[in-house]
Amino acid sequence: MGRLRTTYVTLAIVITSISLGMLFLKLDQLPPIIEWWPESSESIDLAIATLFAVFQITIASLIFHSSARGNNENKKRLIAVFLLAQAGKYAPGRIWSPFIQKFVLGEHIGISGIFLANIIVFGCVLFSQILTAMVTLVYFYSGVIFATIAAALGLFVPNAILIFLASTSLTKKWIFIDELSKISRRIELLRNIGLLFLSGILTWAFFYIGWLKYSVDEGIALIGTTSVSVIAGYFSLLPAGLGVREAMFIAMKDFAWPLPYEHMPQLAIQSRTFLFLVDALTAVLGLLLLLFSSKSKS
Image 1 (cartoon, rainbow, N blue to C red):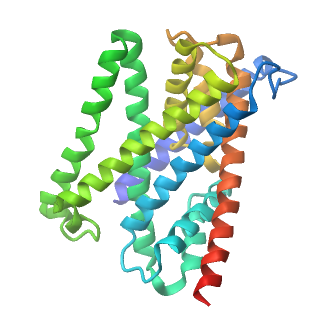
Image 2: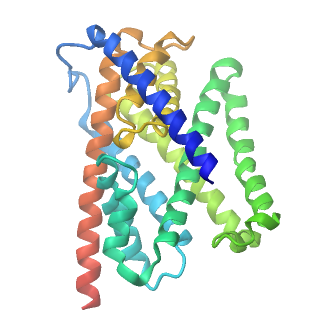
Image 3: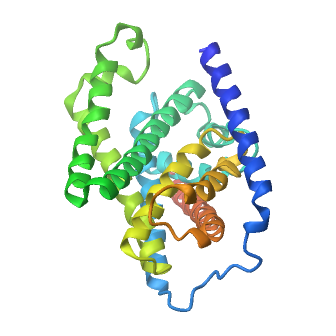
């Protein structure tokens, strides 16, 4: 684990440094004035995009709930804590979301159980982003039918990984692994990964195609670009992938997709602002749900 951690930190330092350098060199490309609310846009499309984004985070909270070990908390409280902790990822370091979860939950769940549950959530979210990027790539090179097939077949990959983990002696001591031998548990995880995938696509489809009025091909290309940039952001040393995500998003304009190249810097800022507002909204909803669950217990 020590070598793996060192490798990750080294890779993150390199990626973060390169990304910030790229952004600095491209400052002249950033728009002086951003058209935050296009004249032809419909508020309903942005509202629907926001709902799907909140739904996606809620699905992640269900994975957190089902993966947390030794909890004496009710489902509503665990989901509320996960939603509230979304605010923590904008603080420096990568420990503040688990810290918030541990602080609120107290002694009911050990810190190792919290970290493991977050790792499982991260794995599911990461795979859904990789699947989105791959499906959009297949769409442009092979068409919508093969993209649909790729999406369906892609869900078999995590199932194979889960079966492998459940049958490997090295992972038998892990807290979560014992449950992977249960078919119902794997089906639950695969369902949630599928929902993460679908809700992510629908979020950005309503954002890019519905609200910002880009064509279908441009919208799908932007969805794939967003997924690639989010994946790159996981290797940032800065909070919530700041800098790395935006640099990768802008750099993707050199890729042979039907992207609105002249708008990429502006879209990087708009999509980041959208994600920030969604996380803020989710944290507020988590706080309200937490207060409601506390009142109902007393």
